[in-house]
Structure formats: structure tokens, C-alpha cells
Image (cartoon, rainbow over all chains, first blue to last red):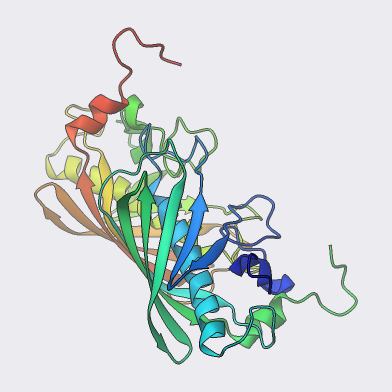
Length: 167
Length: 167
């Protein structure tokens, strides 16, 4: 893995279609997350229509960003715990077991958002990640995600069937 | 209010731009929620690109649907507690204080989703709503939202300033 590539750039091709973070989903947010020391960081600029009330970011978008930022952080943390690069096998990919968000104050929509995260615990196939959202340097929301390692069957289900068209 | 109009059809015009539920947000989900006895119901058909992994619904969309379904239910519940129709003044409109979602199993993307909700408690300006998501009649996610009555300043902030262009 290049040091500069994002966590999501390394997701296996058959599980890279997530609306929040899949690089192969042309309609989605395609967030990109990197390590910054012990914290993970995503930067995202909301679209003008991602509003709650005019001037402020939609809470569902904030939940979505926390969700995908955290599952990405979980995957990266598992590779790091094994001392492996993210482009090595077997691949780690996580789904969300639970998501909690506390909305602390309205999030201004005018500028870019920063989502930062930290691994709280690795428990077998689960990784607990706490994340927070900053707008103009002010924390506006805090989240916690229990990310669960994707079952092998998901990878298999997502793979094209032999002989099936791949597009 | 017509018995058939959705909760969201009654949101005041200056706070009807939410990406999840605002009827004035042309890019958004525009969910519509109604009472079904003591439960509230929203039906929503995900777009094909609202995927987590191929075949399944993106968790961020599920969180968004639970969020807006629950804040709508909170507003409707407050009107009902006061014995008022939703098109009467003063208007009740809620924001999300906290959101929790447990993802119980993958949610198939093929068909329409049903989101159902129930008021757990009304505590002053807060309403706690529990909601669940069904796909093909099976519960795939459960959520709980603490909805908080929107401060008056939000209505004021969302109103065009006197003399300012309105478009």
C-alpha cells in the first residue's frame, strides 16, 4: 500500500460499492480516510442540498460519514494490529453492528467537515471506534460504531457468478 | 390536516428542506410518514445505488430513514398529545439529539422498505421514539432517537431576512 492511498482504495473490488465509501459507487460519497498518528481522518465537503434546516448539515449525512469513517478505521486497525499492509491477503472489511451518534450542536454546511476517529477496542472480530465531526474546528457530533468483520459469505455473495457478466 | 396527508406535508415552509424528509428538497428522500394506530409508518424504496455490498441496503440510508421517520413521529405525537391537527400553530418541528441503530441482519435492497415507529416517552421538549426497519416483512434494524423540539431560533434563522432575496 502506498502511504498516501486511503483505506478505502484498498477495499477488495467485490465489496467496494458502498454508497458511503465505495470507490466503485459513482453516486456515493466516496469518502477517503487516512491515519494521522493514532487517529484516522476523513475530510468531506457536503453538497448544498445536504441540509437539515437551511445552513446546517443533515443529521443523516453526519451519521453516514461517522459510519463509513469508522468501518474504514476498523479495517485499517486490524491490518495494523497484524503488522500488514492494507493491500495484503486475507482482506479485512467491516460492516456496522451498531451506530450511535450524539448531535451536540448544529453543523454549519458552509465549509468542509473533518471526521476523526480512534480505536477504543479490538474484541475478536469486532472493533469499537469512536469518531467525532468537526466543522470550522468545532466538534458538532460524536459517534461510536461497533464494526464487525464481514462474514466470508458476503465476499462470496458479492462476487460475480462464474460466467456471469461482470459489468 | 387531511387525514391522508403525511406528517412531513405539514412542516412549516421555512423548515421543510431536510435532505431526508423535506418536501422542498428536490435532491432528497422526501419520506412520507403516517399514523397506523399507535404506530407510525414510512415506506421507502431504495435506489439501486444505495448499496452497502451488492444486494444490500447501505447502513447510512437505514440510519437516515430511522432518523427522519422518528423526528416526524415525534412532531406528530406532540400535536396528538395536545389534541391539535398538524397544520395548526404553533408548529412543532424536531431535530435529532441522539440516534442509535442496531443492524440486526443485512437488509435486501430488492424491494420497498417499511419503517415503523412508536413513541416511548414524551419528556418536556424531548420525545423518545423507537423505530424498526422491515424488508420483506422481516425486521433488519432497530433504532432509537431522542428528538428535541427545534429551538425558535432555528425557525428564525431559516426565515429569509427582511429585504433579502428569497431565492
